[in-house]
Length: 343
Ligand code: NAD
Ligand code: UD1
Image (cartoon, rainbow, N blue to C red; front, side, top):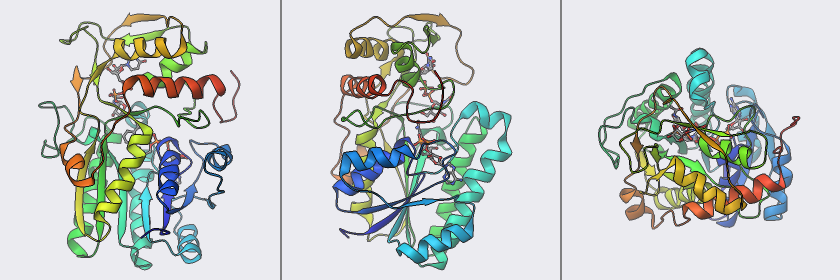
């Protein structure tokens, strides 16, 4: 399976681009397909600087079957790693149709073209959001499934699609990797998370505050039933996540069926712990202010990653300090990220 050619949809995005590095390091050949709705083409240059390899690029959309067919014909993919999706929870509430169209219809078209070309393995970017409101922590894979917003439902629906596709085709393999909170950046500082507009997620917001693009971090809720009153999450370094994909695929590439796995560290960190780790990384105080709880947020959420650890011979070993150190290296080298924008 070394030298296998892998279609990486959304491969210019945050998680997909780091997965391309992990794939390359493991001896695979990634081919990136991206419509650049949330990424810069400069990612390809950065990947080349990191790996010494120019990865082939298909500029296109997963909803465009003709583009997909051309790519499948040209590259003869052995498997697909499917990252392409819209991912902003608030936007999905305001514009659900765009989310169902992109994330669900796009995946249906991708699966149809995979079927036409006899490509039988898919690694899918799922999310801990498929567990809805956590009924208990740590969350294992048997936790009930549900959602609280349209983005989350797109992940639940695609997982169901994959379950059904695997039932119908006994050779089909679908690995649904349920990410907890991906953060961090490549250790080179050349690649990292590059959100457009105001970040929704904590770590990019803290990073932009540290670099002076925001004046303070609003801490959404300081009266939760947690040690310091702030929300606790399972932050996982994006390179651990990327390596988790490769480990999952290596473990299961000859199997079939629908297989869901949590990818998390099994450790929770509070908002204030994240800010404090980031202060050590950048060597300065990061201003923050108490703000009301964000609607839909829960106090605590972290993974039970035991299943992935047991099956893949993998674990997330990079700690919170490494995550914030790597984000700071990236943020200070590229204060405005790679996408075209003004400060
Ligand atoms: P991202 O926005 O950085 O990457 C997604 C990439 O897909 C972007 O480069 C975008 O341009 C591309 N894309 C979107 N729609 C497309 C389409 N129709 N055709 C082709 N390309 C398209 O997001 P990310 O953080 O890297 O997330 C990757 C995947 O992981 C997504 O499926 C996301 O839902 C999932 N996920 C992310 C997180 C997170 O916190 N980052 C958590 C859980 C799950
Ligand atoms: C959010 C999404 C989740 C998605 C995940 C992707 C919501 C309700 N949930 O999860 O569906 O899968 O991102 O990574 O949007 N916080 C602040 N100030 C900020 C930003 C965040 O205090 O400016 C706090 C939050 O209240 C939370 C923690 O930081 O306690 C982490 O927030 P975030 O990074 O947005 O991740 P989640 O809410 O876990």
